[in-house]
Length: 191
Image 1: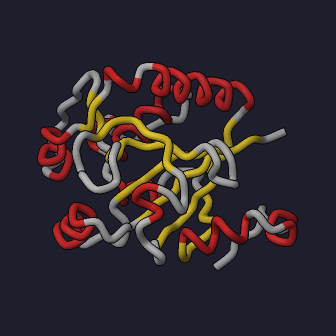
Image 2: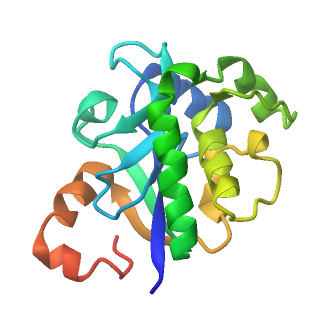
């Protein structure tokens, strides 16, 4: 039986998010990972405290809380990536490692410029959201097309074997996924 992990592309209204959207001209400037369609286990490298961009590190993200709780409309795309049972077990181990050791990791502020200039600069314990997602994919055995440190959020919109299952508003998806009707249709693309 096939299992999945999920990529959540999003665009909040924070000042840094608006800056990156202006600078990159891309619709989404944040990417998170989830081990389930309900997004109950959604993780990324992001701000630790809602009002302040820093400090930032590995964090569990919850729709309707924290930064995601500050905005009633959050454009998003959600992609499903098939994984084997072994890959899913490795995924859970990677996430568990980051969760247990989050105090040694930080947001890769210094790495933002090299990422957008396509300069490979791997920092051992610092990641931006897209580097964390690419690093995790690499660690669980999903091949990357370039070094993990060069991934930008928009790169995941064309990630091999990633199927778009939702394009719309994040809060709406989150509410709908909790209804039995939607769960019975969860393997279909919805808009």
